[in-house]
Image (cartoon, rainbow, N blue to C red; front, top):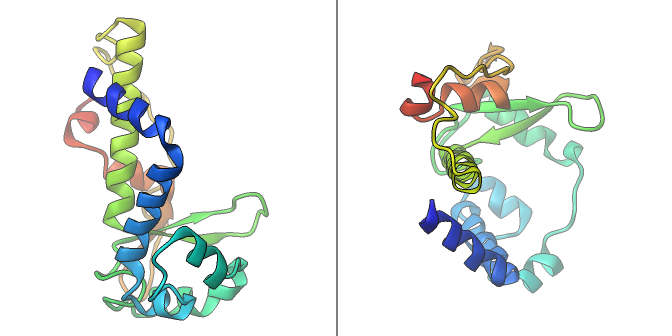
Length: 170
């Protein structure tokens, strides 16, 4: 927990640089995909270029892309690999919106929750919090299976199903 805490403090000390590196990793992941090319990120290499070259768009701008993911989900379209999951979220509008759930997102979520647990252990000075069982209230991980085979469900359910083995054991 001390190592994770030190890393977090280092990231907070230079948050702008940490966010720039994160944007760079995201752009590297998606620049060669069909949707990345359609968004104009192929040549974007900086925050300034991102702001200048990539316009803010509403969900309706992506409807055709989502239709393709749900009907065929080809590798290299939205991600280098076909998606296993798409989460649905009503967000603030009440209308269902698809949210891609690539493996990187699940890994990031795991890192976040692990850090949160270890931070709580460290701050509370208690390591017995999970000695009993833990109840997780989550939506279904699979609400439907799209024609492409992608599993459509709720983010909380997907995160629960794809949680680390040790977490599922409690």
